[in-house]
Image (cartoon, rainbow, N blue to C red; front, side, top):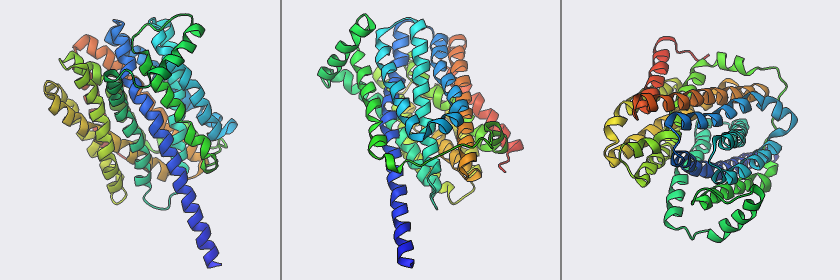
Length: 416
C-alpha cells in the first residue's frame, strides 16, 4: 500500500513537472513574439510621424483590452475552460500581427492593437492561472519565478531577433514572401512598410506557441469558477500585493512601450536603443529567480518594499545614464530585475492568500486587472509627459508611481 502511494505521488509530481514545462514553453515562445512587437509596433508608429502622446494613446488600447479580459476571465473559464481559451487567444493574435504592416492610419491600427491586446492578455492571464493552479508542495515562489522568467527571456530575445532579421533579411525570406503573397490579395494592397517580413516572423512564433498546448493537453489543469468570490474582494483583501503589481505595471508597460523611443531621442542608434529593452528583460531573467527564491525563506512583503524603492532609484538615474549606452544598459538591467522580482513575489503572495480554485481564479483576474490598470495609466501618462515635459517625462512618471507605492508601504502596508 505504501509503495502504491509512493508510485502515485511520484507520478503526480511528474505530471506537475510536465504541466510546468508545457506552460513555460508556451510562455517563452509567445513572449518572444511580444518582444519583437514591443520594438516593431512603436517604431512603426514613430516612422509614420505620430506624436509621442498619440503613440502612447494608441498603445494604451492594448492595455485597455487587458482590462476587459481581466473582467471577463471568470465567465470565460466557466464557459470555455483553460484549453479552449488558450487556443482561441492564438486565433486572435496571429491574424492581427499580419495586419500591422499593411496599414498606416489610426482607424485601422488602433482596433488592431486592441484585438492583439485581447489575444495577448487572454493568453498571459490563462497561463498565469494555469501555473498558479499547479499544487506545488514547496518552493512555490521558485516555480512561479521559472514561469515569469520564461516570459522575460522571450521578451528579451524579441528585440535581438528583430536586429538579427534586419542584418540577415534573407532568413525565412521565402516563408515571409509566401505569407505576404497570400495576405496581400485578401487585404487589397501591398504592405506599407519594408519590414513586413519581421511581422510575419512574429506571427509565426505566436502560432508556434500553441504547439505545447496541443501536444501536452492532458497536463493542463481543469480550472473552474463558481462565482462565489469577486475580483474586487480579492483586491481589497490583498492590498499590498495588488497595489505593488499596479506600480510594477507602470514600469513594465512604460519601459516596454517607450524605452526604445526614449533612447533614440537621447541620441542612441536604433540598435543601441533596442538593446535597452533587451537589457531590461535580461535583468528580469537573471535577477528574478534569486529574488523569488529568497522570498521563499523570508517575509515576501519586505522584498516588494525594497524592490519598489530600487525601481524609484533606477528611474532617478536613467536621465543621467542614458547618454552612455553601457551605463544605461546596466541600469535598466537592474531595473528589469527588481520589477520582475515584484511580479513573482506578488503572484506568490496572491497564490498563498487564495489557494482554492474559485478564489484563485478571481484573485488571478484581480492581479492582472491591477497590472493592466497600472500599465494603462502609465502608458498614457508617459506619452503625455514626454510630449509636454520632454523625453524625461518617462522616468518622471515611473518615479512618481514608485514613490506612491513606497509611501503606502511605509505608512499603511498590510497583507492579511
